[in-house]
Structures are given as structure tokens and as C-alpha cells.
Image 1 (spheres, rainbow, N blue to C red):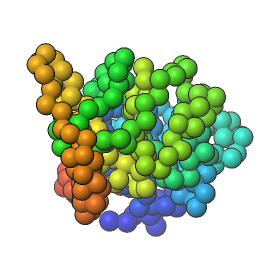
Image 2: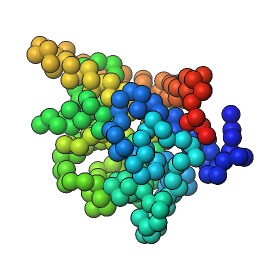
Image 3: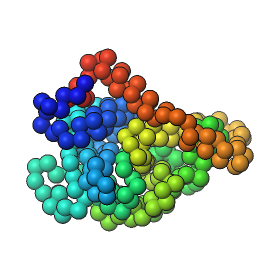
Length: 251
């Protein structure tokens, strides 16, 4: 239900609701990290204005009306009581300034993606159907430079210029996902974490991996990219579950 007529932050209301649902489910799936990490969504054509969660708010409590509306071109953004987290400003502001195709940006330190990011070889081989989703579609950042203030955020953004690459394994750090919508980015983040989990657990057996041939991996990736509306249905179902539970995410 659209409550925008009674709420203070009502611009881009549906976008806010979708983001809030994504935060709630990221927490439920244990992909959050205390009061760190951020999701953002561009709301203008150039991508420089975006919605983002407020500074140091727990994912499980974020509501649609809580989202900050930020202008990546506004140097005064870090001033005032509603300033975003400075590392979120650096990473997400940097991405939205440099990569207009990155409409939605999700950054987490989810367990299995971060374990993958901690390995000397952070590639994800196509050992199952989920992993095929990301075949030749992942950027690996091997130049970690500390907290993602503006310089580090700008450096990361330079690595995401290829629109085909929508996942960045941030070496020694975590995971960054981009998508056209909240639904697309969340679905991609969900499946990458699942694929990383399967891979890490497979490694733990110590047994040889059954790696899918490259041509079949690419065929499968292309088939999954054309699969109709799974991301839309996925987020719609998650919102329906929250609604059934009486959650206040959409307030």
C-alpha cells in the first residue's frame, strides 16, 4: 500500500519501499554487519542523485521514510545532521558519479563472499548453476587501500566501467553489486553469496572440483540473464512476506 501522502520523505516512494525491503531481508539472511554497509539507488538520469540508508542504522530497522536523498555533486553533503557515513559517501558517491549505468549499488561484507575476497585467488569457478551466473562477469579488486573514503571510492569506481561486469569482489574487503533496479541488484547479491557459499564449502571437502566447461558456463549465464522476471518476483515475494508479518518497512 502506498502511504506516501502521509509520510515526510515521499519523493521516490516505491524506490524507498523496495530499498527498505532489501535492507530487512539482507539482515534476515545474515548479510549485514552491525550498523555498517550501505545500499544506494540513483533517482535521476545521470545517476548523481541517489537514495541511501542513513548513517549507522541497523538494516533490520530501516524504513522507506528513513532514506537519505543525496547529491554526489554536492560538496556540502558531509555537513549537517543528516550527513551520510563518510565511507558510504566515498564508495557510493564515487560509483554514482563515475558509473551512470550503476543505478543500484549494494555493498556488504557477507560471510562467504568476504571469505572468497580473502583468498589469494578470488575467482569463482563455474562449479554449479549459481556460479555460472557470474562466469566472466566479475571484477576482482586486488588493490585494497583501506577504508572507502573518497579516494578509495573513486579508485573502486574506475574498476566498474564495463557494463557487463556487475559484481566486484573487493579483495580483503567484501562485495559490491550493481543493478538497474533494487530487485535486480538484490537478486544478484543473493545468488552471488549462495554461489560463494557453495564454492567455499566445496573447497572444504578437500576433494577435486567438477568444473563446468567454459562454453557451457557461458551458455548457462546467458540463459539465466534472459530468464524472465525472476528478480522482480523474488523481491515481490519478500515484500509480501514482510507485509504478512505486519512489518513497518514501508512506512
